[in-house]
Length: 281
Image (tube, rainbow, N blue to C red):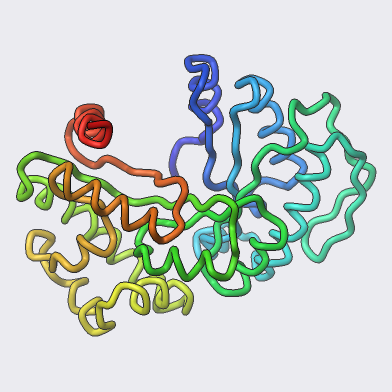
């Protein structure tokens, strides 16, 4: 379990004045939709209207270990978006849902914005379709190649598509690859294991990467340094600044509007600066 995000988000809100503060993602099985509205509304107020929120009902196995019944994830999301959106619109909300319900609920303060961006984390076809109906945008996790982003966009038709991708940049290509491969190796093991339980997770890995399932299975036992570069190409942005810029362009072509890069090198700030310098010419 990681640190809670609200303390860091509040610190960022008071230390900055222009950047958007995106949270991705909150799970209604861990925060009731009314609490989600309370907290994100307060953050939006503190940041003068710079908050955005992603919500999703994934991480089924860890949540079940907490003794929580999360067997209706789509119903939970449908209820959550209805309740949160209504409360942020300063309405008194009564909602009887399949998972979450509220009766005459209303925030005690006037939210700063009724149109605070509410995005949905989704991967399976039903969740993507629901995203298109109730959310302002789509969020896609790590280990989804650009081909999956394009596929997801064709279903959800999002106005905004946010995707997470690990990144390693260096003027020395081999150094960048040596940095990214251990990270990818660990993520690959996690997501391949998930794919054995969740068909949509396996589809996002295999069907849109061009890498056969047998090669995924074999890669789980490969030493990180020996990881096939096809995995680097499909699931990360790594290499020289020019190579990273080309990979970013591939995500843009796949309808990704917001690329969330996790810089995994020893000096993330320097890596960000190097990529920014190249991108800005």
